[in-house]
Amino acid sequence: MPAGCRNHDDAARSEALNRARMNCFSCIRLEETHKISYNAPASMKIRTRFTCQSCGHEEPRWLGRCPHCGSWNSFEEIKAGTSATRRTQTSGHAPVPLNAIETKDKVLSDSGIEELNRVLGGGIVTGSTILVGGEPGIGKSTLMLQLAASMKTKGRVLYVTGEESAEQIKRRAGRLAACTDTIEVFCETNLSSILKSMETLKPVLVIIDSIQTIHSDEAGAIPGTPSQVKTCTYELNEHIKRHGSSLFLIGHVTKEGIIAGPKIVEHLVDTVLYFDQSDSDVRILRSTKNRFGATHEIGLFTMTEKGLLQVADPSSLFLEHRETSPPSGVVVAAVYEGTRALMVEVQSLVVPVKGGISRVFSDKIDSRRVSRLAAVLEKHLQVAFSDVDIYVNIAGGIKITEVGIDLAICLSLYSARTDLLLPPKTAVVGEVSLAGELRSVTHTERRIKSAYEMGFSHIIGPALKEEEKAAGISYKGLTTVKDAVRTAFTQQ
Image 1 (cartoon, rainbow, N blue to C red):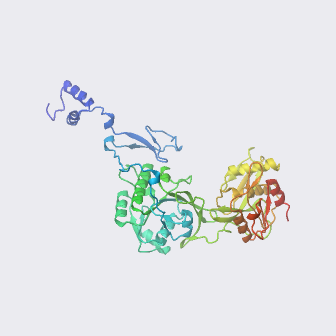
Image 2: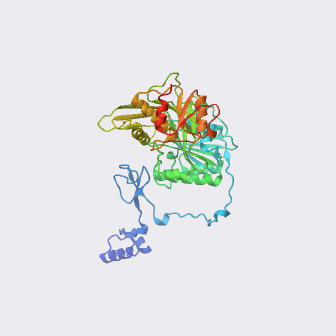
Image 3: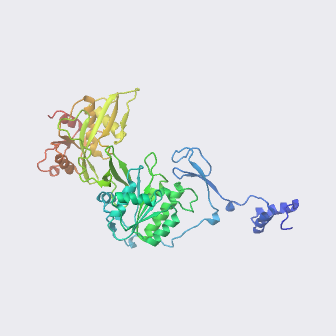
């Protein structure tokens, strides 16, 4: 058959098709020469899958709504390579008995920022990857640039920016007094170029601003998609582990307040930090995951024209000083966040129900906890809350999750419902059970001392052991929430 023939007879066409179905190499050449189309075997096909751009969930066909995260119209078609081109990597390591593994003490590097060291568990662990998320403009890039300038260790710092130019970084560094010879600025978004620079420079600290702008040629999608974020995070994390550096990744957040991209990114990294802003313009740095320390610590900053400043004395940061009795519904609580004792105001408001069904509105305290404590008061003190809407807030906008604020919420709700005022210079602490009992909380003695240092002369809380009471401090320890209400609103 002539090599260039396009009008061969039916017998030759039938023979070519039969040979194509047998996956013969010569038939493939025949198909290329004579333009014969046939259904290639599954091993030779280019598979098509649909990936959710919100969470990374994959489906074999397009769906209007993601079954994993619930996002609408978020699936995009992704073409995968053939099975013959997929790479399989093996580490070459064999299983090792657990008792035979040698461990080394973790090496901590001083970041030069005390509040950041507190949240990280004492400092930056060598070889760790830290993901920092927060709202736009909250100060993530500012914090990272201050870290790059203040980190107390020998070596270079590589600051990779995919969102700003080198001139913008230089202007911010000048405003923050962070211009040092140890910082290398690299305006690049290609992962291969970044890894080559890391290999050449060998920095002790790498900052990626931000991970959603970095793209890999192998991921096959635009930057910011789940496959790109996952691939880039994995490659950077592996490089850091091999070379003993430390890595900070800045991550964008969604409108729900979670870090954009697949959830697997938070599993890959060692530490996850969230940067929040309170109503009083205080920046709060929290840890939601930390493989090298606790997750209950918080770091407090204030934003100024010279950058982020650390809060030296946060005890009274969220407290309004009053010489007279506070208004109805306002109670001061002694809470414990990390290793700090803070004094905060719990504010409650009750209004007649609208629409026939009572509702609870609370941003900084879990609304389910407020509903539970309102039910405890209704059960044990016969105070009705089913016919009112409840509003609860924490002054200053700080979010409180610890149980030591339960009694303060109860007294605040009771005061708002009955219009009774709490005596001045009174603070409370304690957990409330469903049975109406007051339960002790951790670090009670330190909470009491902090309250007295702030000028509070009356402390109400659960009963304590004699050895837990500080000398010279008057403390009223009670056993039930009913006794606490009676004591709080009858003392003058």
